[in-house]
Image (tube, rainbow, N blue to C red):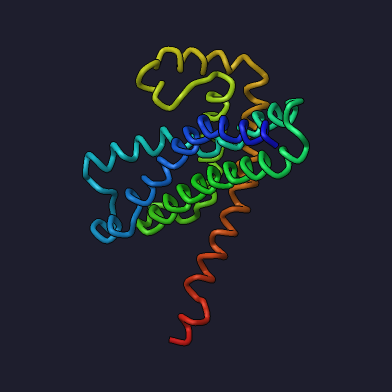
Length: 214
């Protein structure tokens, strides 16, 4: 078990960083898409430049949240280590990865839910499904760029030529289309599962028995 705990602590370095990147769009979604903005401007988007800068950062960092699902490849490597016992994998590493994946993807789901609810309050969309699917597709492309091309969100500003070059090269790579479709399918499936669970919890919370009795 000692080797498993050592790996557990070692994983905290990159897990903490990846989870931090996933939390950024989630926190921004609470700030940017809170109801106070809709109350101030019920029929149009805010005119505040800072708000639009925050929205740009939200868009750039959003793929980092579903990206965490692809970190499962590190678990495969960890579980194959001859120094880590089966009990170490079961009782130490599996719970660690489960928490990481759940928290990261929950950040993704909350970010999109807040965005679609905000646009709905502004009457800018009637049906959120098409927007949700589109976001999943765009994020699938972003995750492929991150996992395969090793691009980060800030490379849009720091290495725009490389980003454009890799994007063009991907169009000639069948793996790009396969990977994007695979990520899109996984993200979309998990998104709606998580969304329904979140909505069910929210519905129960707002209609819990002690609240109804009062």
